[in-house]
Length: 556
Image (cartoon, rainbow, N blue to C red; front, side, top):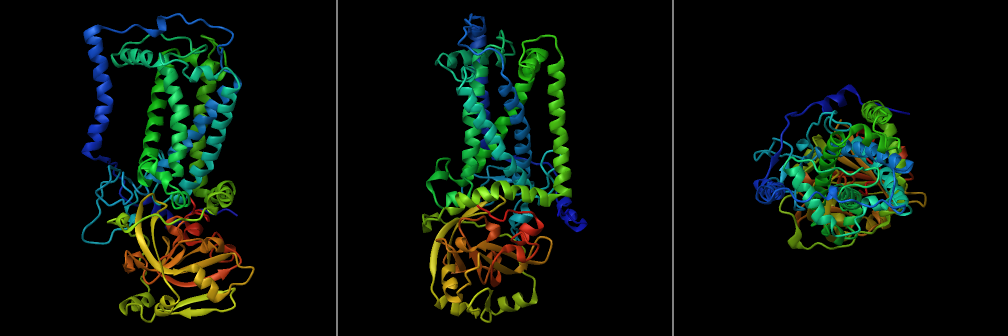
C-alpha cells in the first residue's frame, strides 16, 4: 500500500545549491527599516525629552464577576493545539516557498522583478532556464519535508493541517464569545491605543512596565497584540491563501485584487508567516521574563500558582512532543509518502471536488494584461519522434484520440484547426507559486468530445506527452470530463497570437483554467478517454501524482 522514494529519486532531492541566501530589493529594505525604526526613534525621543510616560499598569482595575477569571480548559487546549498546527503549517510552507524561491508584487513574475529572493542564482541569459531548475534545497530542520523538489508532500502536509487549524480557530472563537473570555482579547475602549503606545515606549527604551496578573487581564499592548493575531493575522492568512487558487482566481477575478493581485497575496501570505514567527519569539521571551512558572501554570493548569513547577514540565513536554512529531513527519514523508498523499486526498480532494471545482472560469483579461515574461517548465522532449516532427514544423504530426469512444481518430494540426478555434487570455497558476498571463488559441475540448463521442461510462480524459517526468518515463495527466467541458478549456496551438513555442508545449498543450499548471500537459502526443484514472500509470492520475505525490484535483 505504501511506497518510498528510490535511491535515484533521493539523489534528485538531495542535490542542488545549498547556500543560504536572501536578497531583498533596496526599496523594500528602506520600507521595512522605516517601519521598524520610526516608532523606535519616536519612543526614544519621547523618553529623552519627556521621560517615561505614565505606566498604565499602575492604574487600579476593578475586578468584578463580569470580568474573566483564570483560563478555562478549552482556552488552554486550543492554545496548544494551535501551536502544534502552526508549527506544521510554517515548516511545510517553507518547503513550498523554496520550490519557487522568489516573491513579487506583480502577476507576471519576470526574473528581476522579485522584491525578495532566496536563491543566489540568477536566470542565465545564454540558455533555457525552467522554473523547476530554479527550485531550491531547504534543510529538513527548517522545512517539512525539506530537501529539493518535494512540493507535492509539502503541500499535502500544509493542506492536511490547515482545515484542523481553522476548525480549532472556529471552536475557539465560538467559545470565546459565548463566555466572558472575549473581554481578554477584544478592546472595549479606544484608550487602548495611547496605553499601548505608553507601554511600547517602556519596552523600546529597555524598561519593564508593571505587569498585571494575566490570570485576570492583560496589559493594553498584550491585548492589542493578541487581538491582531487572532482576528487579523489568522483570517488574513486564510484569505490570501484562497487568492492563490486558480479555481477561485479564474472565476472571481476581483478577489485577488483585494490584496493587489495573485502574487501580492502570496507575498502577504509570506509576511504573515514572518509576523507569526516574530510574535512567537516575543511571546515566549516575555512569558519567561515576567514569571515563567506562574505564566505556564496559567496556560497549562489554569491556576495562578507561583511555585508549582508542573506547568513548566507539562509545557516543556508539549514542546518536545511537537518537535518529536516533526521528526516523525519527516520520516513518514520519506517512508510512507503515499499515505500522506491519500490522507490529503481524503481531507481536501473531496472538499475541493464539491466546492471550488464547480466554479466555471470566466474571461476577464485583455491583451494589455499579457505578461512580458512567462516561465518555461518541464523537460523538453528528447525523443527522436518529436524532434523529427519539430524539424518539419509538425506538418506530419497526428494527434491520436482513442479509448472508450465511438469514433477514434487521428488528426493533423490542419484538421484540428479546421474544426474551429477559440482565443482566450488567462492567468496561469504554477504549483511552484509563479504565475503569468498569456493568450492561448486553440480548439475547445468540447469539439473533440463531440467528434469522438465518448461512451456513457467515461469520466476521465488522459493526455499523454512526448516529454518525460522528473524521474523519466512518459509524462501524462488526467482531467475529469466535466472539467474538460468547462469554459476556456482548450487544446492550444497558439500562445500570445503566435505559434506555440517549443518550450511551451508545441505542437499542442492543454489549457484547463481551474487547475494548476502541471495538469496542463505540454507536447501532447495522444488523448485517451477512460472510465477512471486508476487504470493507467500507477493509478493516481498523472505522472506527477504517481511519482511526486501531487494532488489529483489541482484547484488550489
